[in-house]
Structure formats: C-alpha cells, structure tokens
Image (cartoon, rainbow, N blue to C red; front, side, top):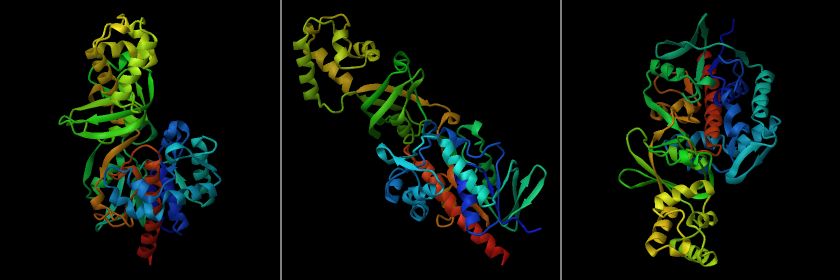
Length: 416
C-alpha cells in the first residue's frame, strides 16, 4: 500500500485549503475531521454570510494584524486577497465587496463557500476521513504518522490545522496545542480575541439592546494610555459592550492583567464648540421643554436616563434653566461617555483565539515546524490573529495554501 503522503488534521478553513493545495501540488492527501461536516466554524463567520477576505493589498492585511504580522509577510504575498478572490470565483462562488473592503459571496450564504470547498476536495480526490487525531507519531525528530483511535495513519508530512479554542462546539477544542507541545513547541497562552467586553457596573444593562452608529470608541489602560481608537458601530448588552468596534478593541488589551476604560464620543463630527452651539440653538427653539425631552434631539431614548444621571442634571428641569456648569457636564458626558471594563467574555465566546504556537518556531516561508521535520502548521493554531473584516480568514487561506504546497514538496523529497 502506498503511504499517504500528506495528512491534514482539521477540516476548517485552513485545513481545507491546505488539503486542496497539497493535492494540487501532486500529493495524495487524507483530511481528518471529527465533525460530521467540514467547515463548521465557517457557517457562523460574518453572521452566517462568510466574510472570506478583505479586498486590499498584502500590506493592508498586515496593517490589520496586531501581533506577529511580519511572520505572515511571505504567506500573504504568495496568496494575497486578490488571488483568494480569484480562487473562489473559479470554484463557482461569485463575490462582492462591501464597505471597509469586506468580501462576501453574492448569495450572502456561508454554505456556498463551504460547499464549493467540499466539492473541490471531492473532485481532487482528497480522502475525507471522519476521525479524531489522538497524537503524532514521531521518529528521529520527524513526523511519520498520526495516531488515531484505531491505530496509526502513516504520513510523509502532517499539517496541523486544528484551530484555537473559541467556539468549542465547532470542534475547536485545543487538541492542536497539545500535539504541538508533544512536537517540542512552546504555546503562547491562548486567550479570547474579537470578543465582547464585560462592564464593571450596570450602566450597559440599563441600555441593553441599544445600537450606536458613527460613534468613536477610545479604550484607555490604567495609565490613561490610549490602546485603541476607532469610529464605527457598537452595541450595549446585558453584560457590557459588543458590536464591530468593541470586537476590534478587544484585540488590543491584556484584559486579564490591566484595567481599562471604554470612552464613547457620541458626537464625533462635532467638536465641543460646535456641540455647545447646537445645544444652545436647541434650547432657544424649545426653552420650556423638560430636560429629558430636550435630550431626545441629541441622544437615543434608551440613553437619556443614564445621560441625565451621568451629567447630574434633573430630568424634569426646564431646559432654559440649565446653567453653564450643567451644559459643560452634558457636553463632557456626550463626548466622553466612560464605561469601566472588568474584562472580556469567556474565550469560548470569542470569534478567534489569540495565542498559540510561537511564530519564531515556524518557518514563515513554508509553515514547517523548526522543532519537528515534516510537521506543518496553518491557521488559528499559530499565534497570529487579526481584526474583523475578513483578515482572519485571509490568514487561514494563505497559511493553509503555503503549508499544503510545502508539505507536498517535503513529502515528495522524503520519498525520493
């Protein structure tokens, strides 16, 4: 029996791309996935629409990777977003670009992306085996197979594409970290990234369900240093803050060690002088309104009781009796709406996992382990993560592509 040349552990985005790339490079390939269906996590990306890359340059991708971006330079250059888009269009998935460069299937269905990959795997005669890897078989510092419940599957090369530990229901159980440790790798402690933030208090719960658009979110650490600032959308929840801005902000802090404050500018288009002029104009137009009714022209209704409280202004006070000091407090509250943060939601609720196999222990040009020959790594199991906008899937595709092609090449050379 001919030895299976490349075994891929994990049938997510990186694993499917790695398997296809290894097969197209001439290797025989077996893809191991314990779930009944491949790409379980892809079904929930982009709210079920699958934001599969970002229509930008390689530099644009790297600018959205807060940690270890330089490690990805080779992979992103070899398989940039333009090439990824062309790849999926050729698989029969028409694409569209939305605001911020986000790329989606025209159908808005993640299932179309997964189906296209699945049919490509079938067409390329990749063996898909429903099995859970139990460990790596190693001889003299190189991988020779994958341990399964019913024995060992021989391999000329193994690609580890097991994902992180977020959304464990999709199969991301952290097995890959254990396998990598067995192969001599150091693991940067996995933690949540792109995850909602938990408030230290109950202000957000009082505004649960309120969505804000075109606001600026600034996050400061204990030393008042700005660690994140961006304009966009966010959401108040029963536990704290969520939405695109908040998920991006979560990638910037060391939430378990430092204390942070989220500061919302509700009127980023107006500086304080313009905001004051707006308030004075509104007062002159309706001088007898109660303060809480007057605020309806400035803020969402759900926010008004909290604004009154934070600005320390009686809600029933006639607006034309507002003092200069009260007006100053109102402006301060609207431009600097502060929420102390207690931490993040659990890692299992995170969109992605930060941390993983140390990038310094992986060859960036081939994705092969520097610790164990014949072991290649791809996707979220590596200590690289990015902001929202399709960048994390771009990392999965390009590292999977490089790992697949390199593993096929390595396995062929070992056989020769």
